[in-house]
Image 1: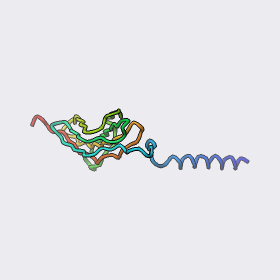
Image 2: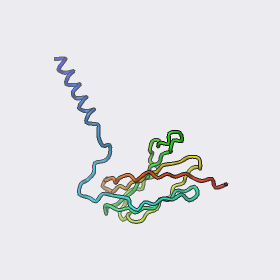
Image 3: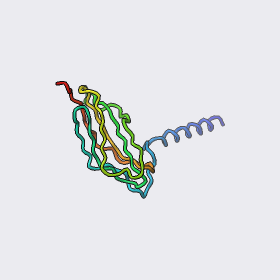
Amino acid sequence: MRKIQLFGTMLLISVLLLSACGRKEAPQIAGTEKPQISDLRDQVVGNVLELQFVLSGNEHGVGFQVDRTELDPYCQCPGMWRRLYDRAAMPGQTGETKKLIKLKNDKTEYLFRIRAYDADGNLGPWSHAIHAKGVDLYK
C-alpha cells in the first residue's frame, strides 16, 4: 500500500513539473487584432535615445513596454532584460508615438526592445534589439 501511495505522489509531482514548461506569458484572446509596433525608428541625440513608432491594435486601448539591458563588454552579449518603461493601454492611444530615454553615460552600451500590448492582455512581438550609447558632451 505504501509503495502505491509513493508511486502516486511521484506521478503527481512529475505531471506538475512537466506541465509547468512552455510559454510564460498571458493567454492570448483569439479573434482580436494583435497589437503591434510598426515603422520603428531610433536615433541617439546627445545622451538621449529617441524612439518613434506607430502603435496599432485593439480599439479598447494599446500600450507599450520598453525593456533595457547592458551589453557585456567582454563577450558582447546581452545581460538580463529589465522593464524600463510601461505605458498602460488606454482608449484612443494609437498612431504615431515618441518615447525619449535618457542614457546614463557614454561608457556603457545599452540594448533596448519594445513591444505593444492591448487592454485585453494580448501581447505583440518584441522589436529587434536597439543598440544605444551616450556620447561625452564635454569633448
